[in-house]
Length: 427
Image 1 (cartoon, one colour):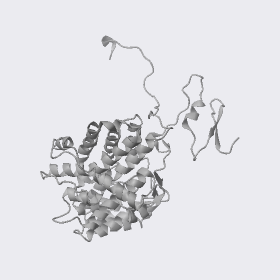
Image 2: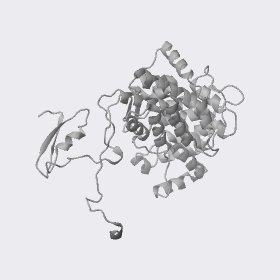
Image 3: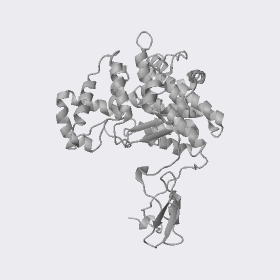
Image 4: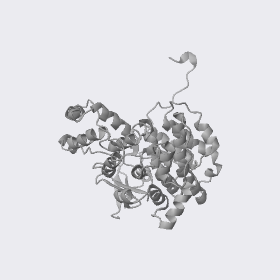
């Protein structure tokens, strides 16, 4: 018997199966051998929310929640946030390596050459009501790109896949800015390919003031995009992989991912943090607020994470950026409440023992607000940053010979077979 196996005994029948262990996992299909009757379907795993099920093998992103580690293609997020640009990180995620100087120049130029959006897409964006939620608009926009680019259906063609990735990265910020200004009744601002990625986005959004985009704000935007660029098999990425497993084109798959991100449990946490801080109102109210949290009267937003059971490595970076942004914008009074709230909570055994630490959403909303973004657009900014990660995951899926169309099983608890009742017999 190999040491790299797991032996399972079914106490109902005494049957024993030996399953291979690879990367600390066993093949779930092996459990199907365990049956009481020969014609049984076989044993399955019940795992609501897929909390302990690996759906794929990936080389894109590594997360160790217990140790507070996040790495893209092996590079620590702290180093990438300090030294790289967003498009440089996008190249890393998509191609697996940081580009040399000449390749980075070519890559930047290729993406920025795709920033113009189709006239048909502009016409679509003008049809939305002024009170339409930006995420609903974004889902529709990306879905519409599927109809604009029929070559995107060639999902098994490597060159076509790359072309769609470049299109999406280039056009998404333009579409977001166009929709935003249209809802405000303002004329659109054309993209400027000579600017950097984040500079151009802030320029198109009209958040550059009367002159050039402040480099501190552009850099802050770049870093926030980097921090959100990928996060392993989260809800939206899993949704994307499920959709793409049917060979749907990337625009449809990413529209589905954006739909998943739209949910407040995934993409709206930083907005909830802002509301919480505003309700606290003053640092003197923090002790009473934390007492309510411990009594389960209110929730502490921006603390804790589904994966991280240690300090979210992105939170420290965002906290530092917040102060840099406030050097060039009006100071957001909520930052004082946030810092005091964090310090008080992390000195309280109630929160420490439960491993509740600030996550990336705790400070990011404060920065976005200081830069002039309305709260309803926060999840859209999340989606802009996550785009290269979604694309990298999609491209990896398309090249994975082990992947099949997603088809989870269920435990059926409904009625057994029963005869049809006529109308007179019902009730």
